[in-house]
Length: 393
Ligand code: COI
Picture (tube, rainbow, N blue to C red):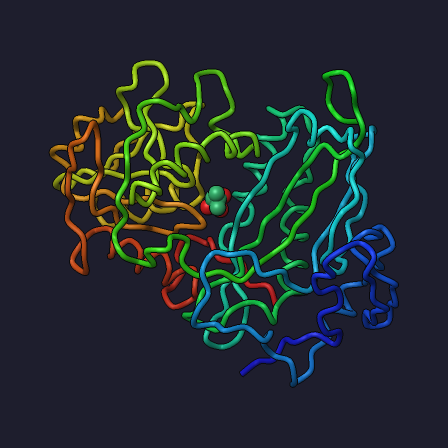
């Protein structure tokens, strides 16, 4: 087994309140760290954190009981961009709080984007990223919409690679989950009048995860929301801005309190066509036809979504990206959700206007077949004929 553990042990565990601090050793860098003084954190050269030794191969984690909760890891990545629009060289640094002005653009006007991607550990110990360039491209598109400069694709992918390697002991053993990597781009500079922030920060942190839903891999029960909308025409539903997510919490909480797994949104104009679920895209299968809503501004162009479209076409399914009237659910044989966090999740039922519609689930479904192929590629168990996998040792 290849060992990729760190010379430096975890340096900045959660310190609780700002008054607590610790003197930490960071390879050849030493930093006096506290949550209230994160600006003092010392950055390290990649050579420091990527040095390996036999002990400490894995972090002390109960790998059999991972869910989708935040488990802070050793390091995060930070890169800033001032008014010249160019991101300076970024740094891997110990994970900890960041310092922001109360008038930061992101806090006042929601100028921010996030991304999500995963690193998997292959049986031979190497680490694999899945299509990180697609997240980089999506962040660029979103940044343009949100009037922010974005890291180049190369800067983004390098930063993700460095973050994953620095946190390699937090990448679960094969088959136990993945390291969820969360890039953020925020307007960090102070601003009072409504305008783009004068400074932007690109951050990446990570957390080991397994199943997104508390149901695990059991089929989901969705509730079709008819009061709240997720996105509007001309709005930002098609990009991964942080401002798309808090507004769904109300409907999500209500659906969960009624026993549903998640909420399925309809278009905000006619309340007629399927859009997406709070945190993922949706697919509907009837016969050999696999349909998913078109990504025309209100629907996120998921990396898993486009990968499943490609795999399905190669398997011989007729894939249609189109408007899907909610009534079509009545005739659907299978429904499933796709997303980085949810992967490919089978939907067992959808409740619309008090009517519960049930779908095929289980081992013999298209959903299971697509899940197996996608995850097989992501984990390096199935040959990647698409060139989607980036090995990062
Ligand atoms: C992801 O799938 O990575 C997402 O961004 C969804 C998030 C709400 C967990």
